[in-house]
Image 1 (cartoon, rainbow, N blue to C red):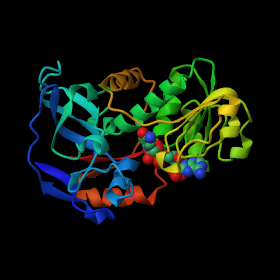
Image 2: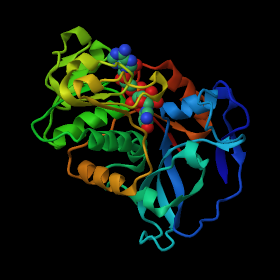
Image 3: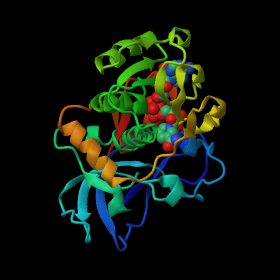
Image 4: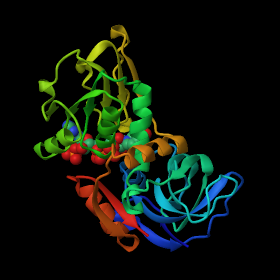
Length: 301
Ligand SMILES: NC(=O)c1ccc[n+]([C@@H]2O[C@H](COP(=O)([O-])OP(=O)(O)OC[C@H]3O[C@@H](n4cnc5c(N)ncnc54)[C@H](OP(=O)(O)O)[C@@H]3O)[C@@H](O)[C@H]2O)c1
């Protein structure tokens, strides 16, 4: 089968298509034929060798996101031919999704949304689960005020919509004027590119996607979650009674099921910036590196 593998770290030209052995699904696993995947910042950092400790050994197949068709559902209840989505914790397990066939634990897999193509659905799992799980940690309740820093990014844009669906009032910090309309359209009240425009000590919860550390915005006794692992820990706010975390995404089929329901009910939209073929994987990474994206880059098998 085809797989995107690296045998050294570096620029996108280290990405190559190899002929890899087909995986044998073990007990409790589902075998999936990949239709599409997407590029996440972690794939880029892994390819560069920027992750450091905890990186799987070389050579490695990359990729976390997957949308595809079940080949063998094992005892999962998923039937052959069913459309599914999944997220594989590639750094933890070494199991990359950028391959024609992928075997994953059934608990990491869910039925794909019916209302979108598998190419669009491939942009959902990792950013969607990060948004979902971090909002769970923040325990944002209906009527509470949430600030999202990076609200037009892949994770931030989904978090904004999920938080609105949960009834929160959301304000947004974005990086450029071009992102303002997107955040407004998805239901944010105040949208600003200027952190000085944010009200101080006003937000019950802050969801920080890029290490903004806008800690002055959270109320005393509030909650502050960052997902920007590379930016380091959130400053200690214990003296103000603020709980803090740097959240790490987990494989979570039940979470994917909830995201699928939100998509099919019309409450959650996924943005695809552009789509590349597997043969164009180097160009796809090069485009990702340029930045300035409005939506995800997906890759079709
Ligand atoms: N801990 C975890 O489990 C986990 C899971 C998923 C992602 N992550 C990390 O979380 C980060 C976000 O991921 P993502 O997929 O959402 O990336 P993304 O799509 O690039 O989104 C990041 C957003 O933050 C914006 N931004 C960056 N710097 C900014 C600044 N100074 N002021 C205002 N906005 C700014 C970016 O704007 P521009 O487009 O203008 O740059 C972009 O809209 C990445 O570092 C990723 O590695 C961690």
